[in-house]
Amino acid sequence: MEKDKLEPKLRFPGFTEPWEQREFEDIVKVKGFKNFVAEPGSFGKFPVIQQGDNPLAGWSDNEPIADANKYVLFGDHTLSLYKPNSPFLVTSDGIKIFFANGLDRDFFYYLLQRYKPNSEGYKRHYSILKKTSCYLPKNLLEQKQIGVFFDAIDLVITLHQRKEEELQKLKKGLLQKMFPKDGESVPEVRFPNFTDSWEHRKLATIATFAKGRGYSKNDLTDRGTPLILYGRLYTNYSSAIETVDTYAKPLIGSVYSKGGEVIVPASGETAEDIARASAVISKGFLLGGDLNIINPNSEIDPVFLALQLSNGYLKKELASKAQGKSVVHIHNSDLENLQIIYPSLVEQMKVSTCIRVFEHLITLHQRKTEELKKLKKALLQQMFV
Image 1 (cartoon, rainbow, N blue to C red):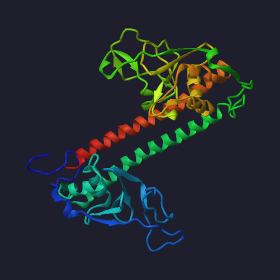
Image 2 (tube, rainbow, N blue to C red):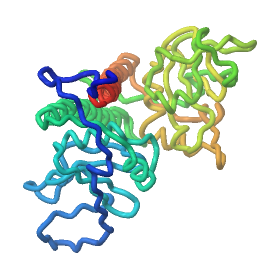
Image 3 (cartoon, helix red, strand yellow):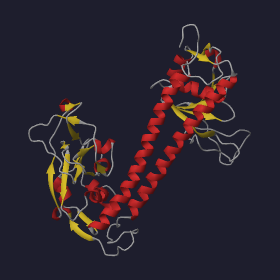
Image 4 (cartoon, helix red, strand yellow):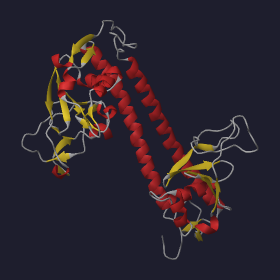
């Protein structure tokens, strides 16, 4: 920003007039509404917004509560855009509506995002906000163009998020149907030309087992040998691991992947968390501590095995073996006794490939969403003073 001219770094062509400095307390008024119980079927003059309402939902087709996806985390609470009026906050003690006369509604919505706190709650935040200065374009057309521009970004973000959600649901549905239910020998959905019953075997008869080598945070480096820590199975979970972003200098007794291992966390916070598995596709990765390592024989596709352990009745059985209170544990001896069911290797690989395609598409949409959010954040910094 130039010292003698209040304007953002990025502006739409044709706008050169300096922005004006205003105090939030001069342009923003807040009205609070207490929570109340709406009687079923009692519709008055206005639609009712209550805590717990989905910001995207509406009481009628003609009067939606909010525009599609017009809500963001604002401090500790949710900021939504109420169509007939102004942005509102759903807070612990009811609804707070922000009014700003003379401003374009959408511009005002993104202005609040530009000045939103990182983690302050609503009450604490507004006491800070009302003492804060902001800068506004005098030209209402410039305000409208900024609002429309960020609306478009939000729309694309929403489309990627919805596509990811749809793919997640489809993947979950396929996993339920592409593996046999407990007590059955064939799945509900199969690829063409596969009709044989699946074979039941104890996992110990088709695999060997090992443990990883423990690494602490102090052992991690910016560069070195790729290292898989058990926490990755919670934060970056997928059926197959091909790349990692954690590195370490190898310690004595380190365990390296040969490609084709299936790893299961040995400890976690809950039984549900710990009942998951991933196949390690790449060679030469260090396998950290708190990892149970399964080495399946040539009859078993590693990704197929990881998918089976992480879904359906086998996931429930694996979770039931977790022991502990504040921290739960699973041992290789628990894995050895699991009853695995599998078809021919060709059919296994078709199932694995199908699910991995979905995971790849899901990852693409997740990355695109994150990229767009970063872009939006940068533009909020550059298109507002």
